[in-house]
Length: 275
Image 1: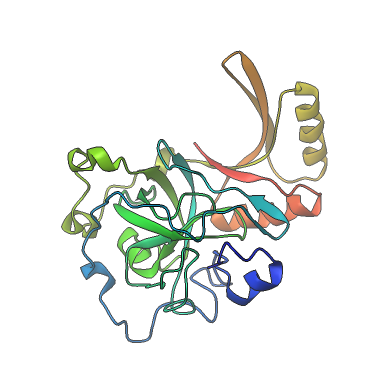
Image 2: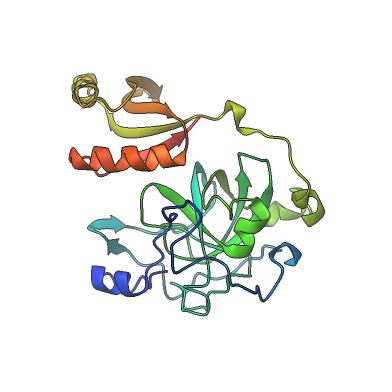
């Protein structure tokens, strides 16, 4: 967690929602679930989204680790795939970025730029489980994480044991929420059919309007022996972009290792792509 009004690295280190997993893949050494959970995370009732005014705190531009973030004014139309992590007892009871108290047993989440608060539908692409969470915090800021889930949300989605999971995050249309028919807790609890067989993970290291720049980066990455590097071009509204990607990658651990390697080459704005 990180209060957005405080933008220094020191403040972030004192109370930051980093996101990610420990060396064993589950959670940081001083984080994780309580030895005796206060609440059964699978008994937490689903959230009913509602219109809420933006919080006074947590919606201003801020900087973490030298990177500047500008929160969105609206979540309408937001849709992205990426890696979810989760955070637990280390932050339980502490202040979130919008001034609320973090409750690891509530269905909440942290995101770097979504408005606070907002509601998103999160689907685990590895098992098909899905639920709605309320975004009230900032983060995660390590590796290429997209969203940081509360303990209960991660439990219901089935990613507590591994610490991370590949997810799809889609903003909830609150006006039409009643017609979306989100899954019930009973449906979420049942083992779901695996849907990840068609999903592949790539690391995108750059996007260029000049194809020459893209192919020069491709050549540089190939020389570094980082795996299968390729350029993919796509045209939208008459504009062609050439994206440099590495992959597909075996898993999230491989993604994290590759992210650190490209940073050593001076590439700090890479991000995950899930096809």
